[in-house]
Structure formats: C-alpha cells, structure tokens
Image (tube, rainbow, N blue to C red; front, top):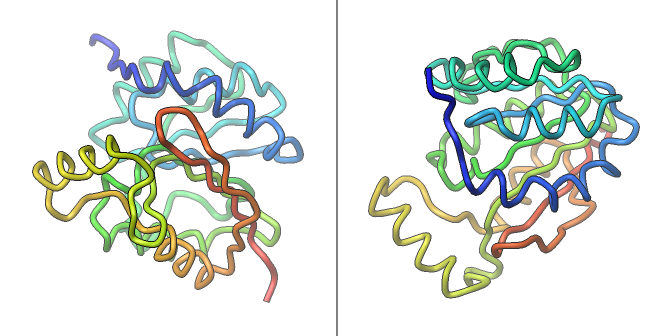
Length: 199
C-alpha cells in the first residue's frame, strides 16, 4: 500500500508542536482523534518521546495510519484503533489528554456534538484537549480564504463547514471543558486548548 500523504500535515506539524509540547508536558498518554494519514502521530510521538501517542480514526483509515506507524517504528506509538465519535462506546476507559486536527469542520454537526459528549464521558479531571483548525468568530470568517474554503466544504458536503467558536465553547462547557488558550496559527487556523474541570 502507498502511504497516504497530506501536505497540510507537513506544513503545520512544526507550529503545532511548538504549542502542544508545553500543553502536554505533564501528560503520559495522548489520544489523537481523527488521525487522518498518520503523519502527525509519527512526528509528534518522535518529538515528544515522554508520551504514548494513541492514534485513532474510522476503520477505513487505519491501514494507512498503521503504514506510517510501522515505517516509523517508534516505541511510543501503539497500533491505531477504530474510533468513530458517533459511537456510544469509545475504545478506551479514560482519557487524560486529547488532540484533534482539522476534524470539526469535516464532521457533521451531530458528530461534533457526539465528539464533545464523548469527551464529557471519558476525560479525567484536569485532562487537556487541543483542537486545531479554522473557526468563525461572532459569525465572521477570519480571512477571505477561510470564507472560500467554507463554500468548498459545503459544496462537497452541506453538513460540514467552518464552525462558530461560540457554538464550540457552548458544547465544551456542557462537557465541563474550559477554554484556557486560543492560539493564532499559520494558514488562518487556530489551536484551542481546553481543560476539564471538576463539578
């Protein structure tokens, strides 16, 4: 099998690393939800060797991810596992840290709601969550290119699209997640950092 490849992953991996190496400095196991090609998993696991990086995605994407993991041969990247956020049961008992990149604008809104419902169920207290991707603020796109990207997304799948940050924060609060940082990133993206708080 030819390994899948994303140029966007190559472009954004270093800027993301600069942020998450601080966010995840006290974590031991990070679940990546929606690992895509597997490039991020290999890069971050190599650079953050104190972590176990558990990649996951829908079943049909696991072969490609595992090709990257097998080639990298890292001790801290177990085989990728099937995780669909709309499933009521996820393949874990708890999560102390979660990373996801370029997923919320691809998912249908119901899946975005399921994503946060799953976090509410599985995150431990003080768990940290990093969400990378484009967002709208007060209903406005941050750039013209993001507005054009949103049109492309909706033409491809009308249930997808760039999400309003206010809607994301509402879902996060229902999951007892507080936004602690909102970093500006290259290519008109953001990195949201959230923390699970106790009741």
